[in-house]
Image (cartoon, rainbow, N blue to C red; front, side, top):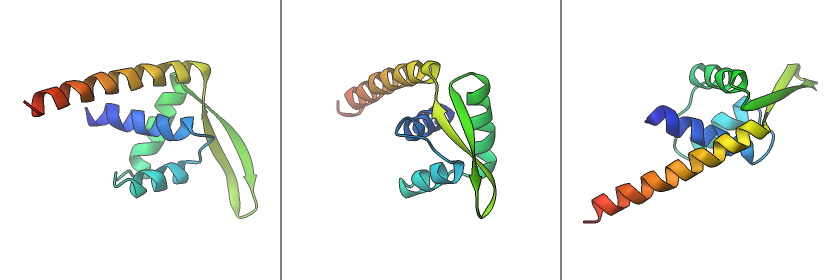
Length: 99
């Protein structure tokens, strides 16, 4: 379950605009969700291979080029599905715990 939530959170961050991996980690940490590079990079690669993400290289004056990720059209569709599933799940959990 945590893997699905992690995927949803990462896609949500990228949906907000082009994202660099260290920015994703910082946003997750700011939300009190611990995420490490060793977890993020394989997940980004898997999402890219599933054609949910694309990336572009940006030259950096302070080191190697940086890879910035964006959602593809397929990624936007998948995100909507995850969003609907999340809403259904949270509604069901609230219904159970409030009775």
